[in-house]
Length: 168
Image (cartoon, rainbow, N blue to C red; front, side, top):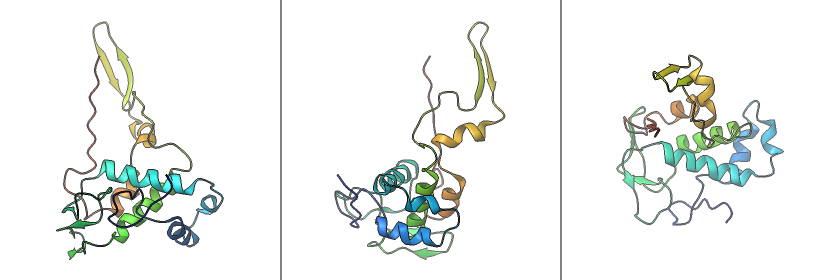
């Protein structure tokens, strides 16, 4: 299936089109690699998925049949104190997709790293040592800080909180 960006559609898989992304990256510094990327559609789809999987947005889906979290009704941007129309994709969502997409060109952000935050585990006499360089380890499977900043005001308080259960 290719990129489908129809607002509110039951088969949509992206908040933006490749043309919209190309237009955005024309004015963004350090984005030269984007125009040479052959799988732009896949990257935009994956960035949209990551945003939908990792954030809880205020309001609720406009319809029960739409594939993506947006558009939403009863939603607002608390940072700018404005209501968001229920038939649009907010510019903040689009910007988050663009930024996550460009950052995904250098690494797969879906990969898991079981040792995130840990530098040592010892079973005999149980010893667990945390890693002070946690941020650099977690970059691969986390949402970059810039995306959190872009989406500020659209998400609920517990959005982006990652819970990890490890079974021994």
